[in-house]
Image (tube, rainbow, N blue to C red; front, top):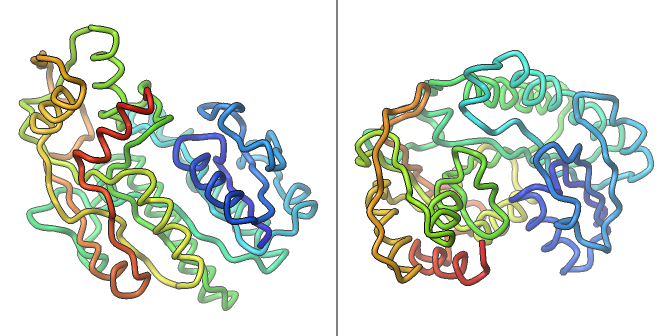
Length: 298
């Protein structure tokens, strides 16, 4: 299979590119290196240093992909709140560019979306069919891109798929992004620095290891529709901090700061559909995934 991974120098994208190379696929990475790292790109992959907001058609013409895994994104909620037009440029206009470029070669698109930022507050595990109530420009832009993907399928008869990720963690995660709370905690703990929780720590998230996310994304190649990719379990940020400290083997107590604008209190996904139609479920428990992440040095 010839595969292109947009955002393939980033956290999730580079792990996906590694998995594709490992199984023998021809892989190309499209990334502007704004957040990605060149060293994370597999040596066997072709690399195109491009911004998806620009014309990517020539690169796709060179690659002639069978499938495009579209992971390139502006993924920081804080940036989306302060720069909503920039966020929409990357996440909406950039996604349209990718859909057009992929369409010229009849390539299947698997679009990586977000669960928590699209569903808004969750009183129970959110299924794909529940109301969508984004609370940030990031969530709204991802939802808009999803609408384009669905429309593309209806208009052009394509079979593109959407994977709504829960909170992903694992090696290579950027501790500078506010969504990378595991990376942030581990970085501070490794340096012996204090950690900070925004809010009272009772807010919850659904954490899934990047290896499990990659497996679900690959499984979506043979499917069509929208799929939640989550554990179905809530973990408070205080509980996460305690687990991180235990895995790191230190006695660490967090500091607390004011909640940040645009963040939700409860987020958890119902991944029943992914289990039924993709044959996917997470293999790693949260503690096992945290231990692997810590031992990897990230």
